[in-house]
Image (cartoon, rainbow, N blue to C red):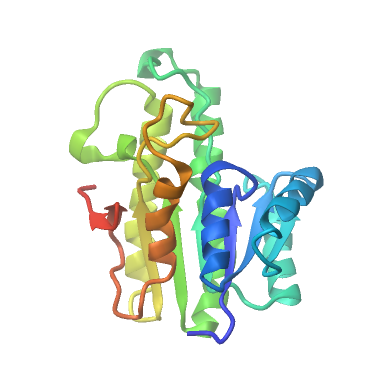
Length: 235
């Protein structure tokens, strides 16, 4: 394990991402939050520095390959190589009642661009640095709506993007097996966030807890699995 653990949390300026960052800071991890623009970064730093000094925030749009590269280079140069990556940035641009035949291609593209390709871009930049460390924890925030085990109707672009994110988790975990890098997905459940809404039954603290646990796994911890409340769930 690196002497100083550096974590990247995408979409770290609100909701689940902000809470994951906060809990990691409490676990003595230095957190760099990725936020869409500088004003969001400033607000995030103001909120998180109440918890302690071990935090930075830097503009990040996971849809922009060059910006992703600049972000990871900034983290590596300013703070050290990241040993934890939380792929939290996500979008849900469709109605829960939407159907495959009614969903425009533009919505599919928008959803996949962030929910899948954003995570791919982050992993592409971070994994080589983790390989040099021979240590890494990659956690992707997925959803129960992406489970093939109980796949149903509604929100097709979101569902399929999260199923694809789970497939990315399995594929990457197999690629890095034996390198000290553990790769897992988790479902936070239905959480009170801007995306989840006020009717959601779970707090952000509950939703973030399993992600943080996966970020801090020991060397013999699980990899290539899907979790909710620290328990494996079907893909």
